[in-house]
Length: 188
Image (cartoon, rainbow, N blue to C red; front, side):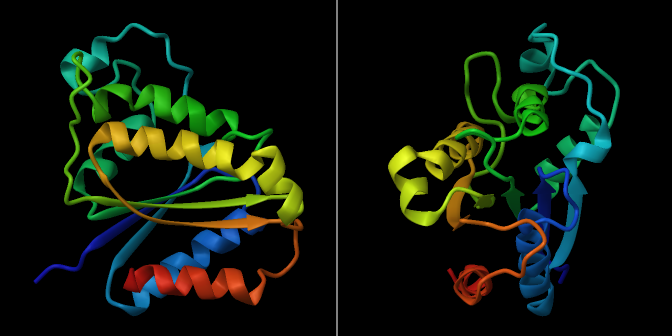
């Protein structure tokens, strides 16, 4: 029997930041349970911007030939995907939004029908420097989570869970409660 596959899309430019650490701990928790885990650093892919041609909605793939094809193939073949993206002004970072645009035809057709499977689950991880109470009041993390959820829901995938780390400090260790929530994701 082949191992299940987890693809982690890391949307932070900081490979040692809070979001990256969350992704590392997630991969470790799933690997411990026998899953194959692959992390894709979105920022290092230098993906060209979407041109809005909409050819992808008919063909199911983007006409621009760069790293998005590999990400598309991994997304189609995984059992679960985790998107780990920091909060940038109540939303996802620009390269993550660009990835959503470039994968548009991978996830939906011209009639906006989903192309991925309901059996595929997704997990969302985000870190925000805004402190916990103000984070909720200002909608910082909820804005990023909303954007991420919408992408995967349109794709037809099933929501797994989320972990939000408000008050994140660059270079600091992850709090015990964040680590605990990440480890529990395997069991949800």
